[in-house]
Length: 261
Image (cartoon, rainbow, N blue to C red):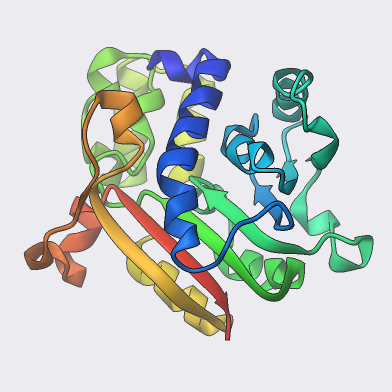
């Protein structure tokens, strides 16, 4: 397990750096972001991705089902000069709807969609929160990439650095985690991620099925977030690997901006 998984403020700061340097410029190639832009993040955690938007003067809303993460976020933002522009909500997204005045110009889903059960149902539900012309930004690691199972959260150093073994059949994967002494809570979290896994092809299929069109997408062989984590410069997937049978295994992050057709 890396320090960033224990030190939540460090993770908050990493999110802030990557969103400011890479995510916002990426989105701005599709839509302008100004102080009048209303932004939400679903699955915001402690809200690090929202800080650059708040710094720009945007009205921002962070939504997460875990109350402890929202409480952490409130602590991190308590001294922000524009905190009156921030709303933090601990709630299941399915308990919210547009009649409660929750509509946005931009919805952020960074490292979230792969954790959501039944992404098909979710992407249908979330449409109601988009204002006319609104966009959703997605960033996620495809399931078959080296650490698509999020095994970096393992407590043991060996398993936390072991690529691809999350693709093994569940009984074998679970057995290896148990043999190496991973706590039940970690095993349960990893099995849950295995259950909610999403591939690039599945993601594209659901977007099309639910009436979204892709405005911009990029497959990264080196995730932009790896700069702050490992000192590596982002690199797009080479063309010869950008075929369905290979790209899921070599794409460490998919960036995508989509809107309704």
